[in-house]
Image (cartoon, rainbow, N blue to C red):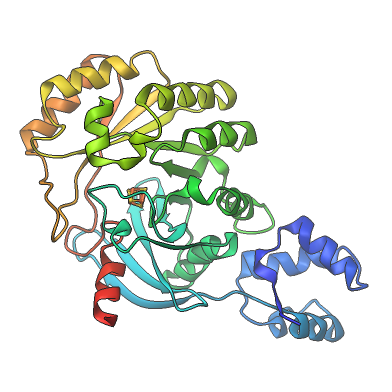
Length: 346
Ligand code: SF4
């Protein structure tokens, strides 16, 4: 019989499992803490669990452990980029960043990505599979152990489209949020999407209190279709309607990500259009100088264009900031390290 990945079970599921093997329910909490809070790698380390139960668990289940294959460290700002091996030998990336409000980890949600955004290296080799919830949480555990530091914020902005792996992503948020485990507050968790409209509605109804980030990057459907194929499925109007629904259900402000690309979307007209689209909405705009990929055609906006874009939005009453560029001396942009790894293996 195939062993169960015990790290994948929520506290409720673990409770049911423990009772199904004839043990007392209260052991579930103890075991859950050992795995998700203490981060043990073997059942023998669970010192308050009887030997017979540990043997039962050992026989029928396993604790997920993700292996770090490579680490790139930025000498400029302490950003660490991790290439992490999954049990089936696929590799994903996680990025550890230091902000004044705490350590943040950017996690992957899929092996590859189907979405085909033109400025992104993660989609180059297509999509292989979804990550399980424990593989998403496992990235935090592996990095906390390596860094010997706590992570207080998690952003789902690594490889993959989180809302295309909806069930596992929502389960992972609940695992990470669980007070008996990592206990990271939902308000410190940010889910990003390229704009899968039906799943934004679904997420709003979960009432998770997580921050939603929308990768917008354009103000007209025509322009958005040029850089993000998802725009062929959902218009900006449909996307913003879903965002308004999310705000009305959760009361949470939405973060709009806007990657500024030279001569594509960094002009005055686009800034004014964006201000018009978002005016009056509980929103924040994050301007991101686009990452220039090795073979990419997109170039980063000039400093003065970024400044002008931000000023137009701020004076229109749309709160806008420019995201600090971290890890510029390493392959910190989403998917670049994995891409190198795949090319190296070829
Ligand atoms: S930006 Fe996100 S959604 Fe778009 S291809 Fe890259 S990983 Fe996928």
